[in-house]
Length: 376
Image (cartoon, rainbow, N blue to C red; front, side, top):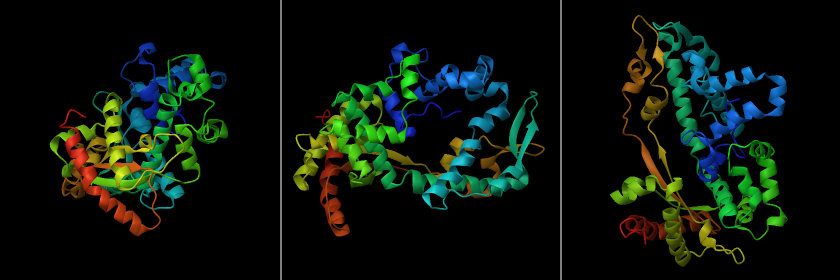
């Protein structure tokens, strides 16, 4: 039940919920919005209430929150080796038609152990002979993230979806869309929220009744695979210190005005060099998107996610200490990238390459100087 709070397009909705939720009406000011929605759905949903008693639903909420006082339960539900990760790595690999996330599930289960700890609880550990099995799992997750989750098309479509929501609420003033994301803790919100899934969202807001709206342009583009194009990509290390620090946090809600101004400057540059696709009377510059993300080294990713896994023995040790392979990996092999997407057109790969080459220097100049000129 831990993903019940996800809205249309799952993690894309997480970002929109964080932008538009009304935290003044919520008891928690820090907890992630989709997690608050999950707990509210479990507690309030009529169908669940017919299947589970209130005390059972409260127990589920506690399990999802703190593991119900049992570390091993928390590890199974939300830990470095949790059931969700074991599921999505294999499932995403299968449905994407790739092998990046494949690992030996049966063997992993063979090497997992339930071990009593001195405090009287139980811990999830790995058999000493299972280190290589665990290494395979960690590497599978790393490659799926780098090759699928961070794939260029996936990044562009996610940003198009999020931008369509933001423009639909802020520019198009579509109240029906705003009501999906302005979580206020009410039963009315939950009732509406549960009615929306990927298909209904995409078909409804790309319908003719919204034609001429900013959000409609992007959603119709997604439906017909007319995607924004990647016109610039570079490591943040290539930019000035001020640019690196600012761009790393450019997608955060508190930086929306600064991001809007930067994207307007980039749109002007791209429009002069290549011309932006026109969409009637709409301002095409609003479809220019700057986005940054980080490729963590497999060692850093492992430290964040799997370092807490204990390898069983007379004196249990952490996975990173026990794995010779991970000890040999250079942790500095991580990189933060900045990309710019825009509504431009090209006919051939050669045209694409020429366009990117022509835009590389002027876009870099804007990114380098924008944050040293008072964002003007």
